[in-house]
Image 1 (cartoon, rainbow, N blue to C red):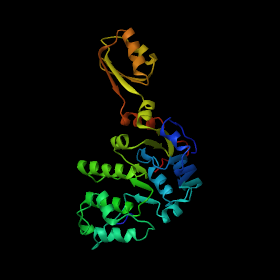
Image 2: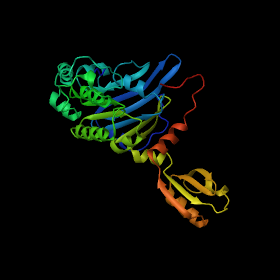
Image 3: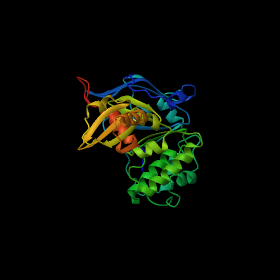
Image 4: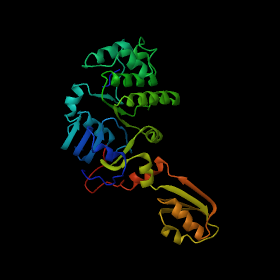
Length: 325
């Protein structure tokens, strides 16, 4: 197995501010990247402090893959700069400070898991012990197994072990749990939390939003090659609508609902109203004043709700451009 626009449209308060006074593990400054007529990265400013665990979210075509490739030095930016620990990405990778688990990779015939990890570790100045990498990746009993005879989930763990082999200070994971079942995903994140507690920096992309909410100190949302939200999971949920307030109308007029405090959107389903509110307490007080508290329900917004709200608002491409990839 081989492992082988400067404008920030919505900046949220939260962990981002903590990075300002700390050494940066990752720093993007005004980075752009086009693939022909496709604007893949449209100007990114991003700083990740050493020791942070950051989730990178975005729809398909949002620019996540290009951003990760720029970070790893696999692509050069058209404009702007990318720095890892103050150095160019290529230099940081050569120094063994960066490990990456990418989605691409093909089985190597007749090579065992231990043989591969031993070979990869030998290329780094201060590698992780091979047995430790096997244990962290959940492969303790598979060192002697040939890589081309592993299941999909086991092969995914080998990619993870390869990323760990150099004992990197920064670990970049692209959809790391895509081929894992529920139990294996839980074991993976236990390993990740243990690795993060050592002071390492983690950056991962995922389509499992619950993973980002549960395991990231900070979430960065990309859309059309730009950062559209950056902050803690709670901050992003508040920015994306805050809470859902639902109640029965019982024939009451719907016109005043959009003017209630905190309400950002109104949806009517039959005789039931659903309000998105950034201040649900104020919304409920106002509804009580109108006598509209029949079968009242208040539920916090999920990260999925916020994600869809934040990205749908910027989903139309700019004139003369195509979608990011």
